[in-house]
Image (cartoon, rainbow, N blue to C red; front, side):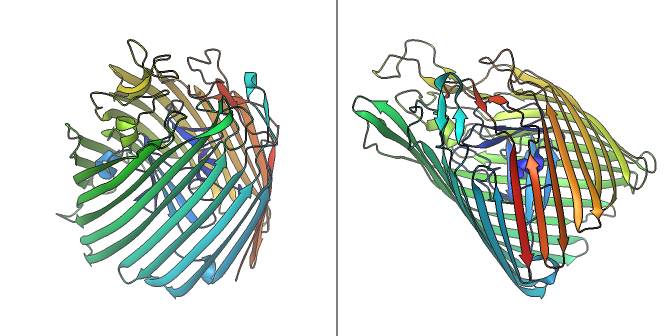
Length: 593
């Protein structure tokens, strides 16, 4: 109904979340945390429970590098706060689970979607399902997207770039069920031109681009032995591939400096749920993962035939989660604990989580949650070296840790109207940051002409606290009013102190014609390079949607007011901010039979 075509678009008006687009990738900020250059490494993104963050750079795919659209998605689950007690590394600020549909909706067999939008975007998807039983069926889906991107990109003091912002994406998935067995496979491959000239690339020279591919295959078995005992087991294989090409200026003209990162890993997990006594459920699990091939390569004019560095990593994990209904329907208590053993690290992260959930009165729900999470340093942070600008840390890195305390209360003003208010406090230790190396410079061309950038654990503690509120009215499937506000006070740069959003959905002619509107206000973000702040904007989207028999449609406008704004980016860009997109449009039609 709102025309969302990517995960970041769907999350833009969710309380506590804000977005950044540096014209390579789209990034999620959670509760005031989105340092420039972070690749969503501290948000764990799942595809039906399968972790999508890669193991080379920890990147969480959230835009078209995840999928070309959301047509095969049934729902998106957002759990704020640390989730390492159940999911391990990367579940630092939130866990976001994208749940695909088991089959084409309404008992139909085939569905096709076509869309056209701003910046020359065209995409198409087709899905097909066989089997009508819940425990037996097969669904296939494939899609393609092509866009030429913005006609012009203002690179601030560097000038204006014409074109060079194109994008092409291919995506496919398979999902099959047979009894207690579920198989799912997924692949997404994306090529994106980069007009903003990062990493020393020449401005306006064709060829600067990134390529990303992410895929996995997973076989899962679920079985209920009794109402109080169940077992889930899964085995999986994953791969990711990244290639960046940076067109730099040389004495004989522009030349390509490529860099490569790729990974393959496999693993298995077993999880059991047991009822120990009435009102109590214990979940116990163990996982083993072998990251058997992780490679990165950097080429420069002085190193045209580099030898790729190949690494490996083994991880063993075990966890317990106990849920106890102390007073059924009124008071429950949850306690979880996970231990992760990385064979290449000197420390063993231990992450607890506690939650007290009370219903003090009919229509009221209070949650008090405290916990810890960790993020292990990835292979990129530990070992990536490039003689022009970056050197690997000599003494390694320790995992980042976070402690969080959160209090939230929801009050049902009626069966259709709910008010939610909450507050949180975060304390982070050993945050991994990239800083210039002290002492005589050893990087640059020629060698020693500039200081190297080195990843290191930040000394001391980083703290943040904030408050959130949401008012949601949903009297029916096609009517919705959702208002949110978030405030955050954080020592980490690049966050809006205030974010407010509103979503409205109104049926004009039943389900045939619906009017939607979304507005998001974000205050300015400040960094060391942008102390005066940038990015304050009011973004308004409107759309018309509906469905009738075998057809479903959407037509809408994004950034209706054509607000021109720019957001801060990391130090690898010569400009301090990157412009965001102005007014756009989307027209989409789906048919199913």
